[in-house]
Amino acid sequence: MRDKYRHIGEEKSEKRSKFWTVEELTKLVKTIAKATDVKLLKNRKEMRKEIEARGEELNESSIRLGSSQQRVRNTANIDANMRFLISYLNYDGLNKLSSLSIPWTNIAEKMSTKSKDDCKNKWTQ
Image (cartoon, rainbow, N blue to C red):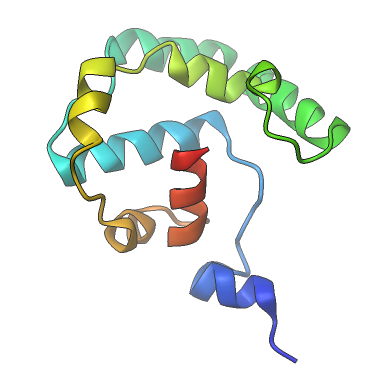
């Protein structure tokens, strides 16, 4: 029998985590921005300071929400990490990115605990 999660997670299946920390989300956005040459984040210094000050609190809040709800996509139930990151997104950059192809394999190589499918699914979420 094939191990579905090992197959999905490729070689990163041992370290693979379903939960995305605010640091991992930020790294995903920065990696996509670098790979596509599109500026996706605004006020990066302010964002970095906010992560240092509130990162653990955001992660704990997201874990609580994720463990308490069913898997239903509802924009009212966005976790704290995503809500935080959305507030720093550059929407002009997102519009430019919509016409570009994102190299998910290259993105996943930079992410130590996520597969290309994990990255793509989180981005399209």
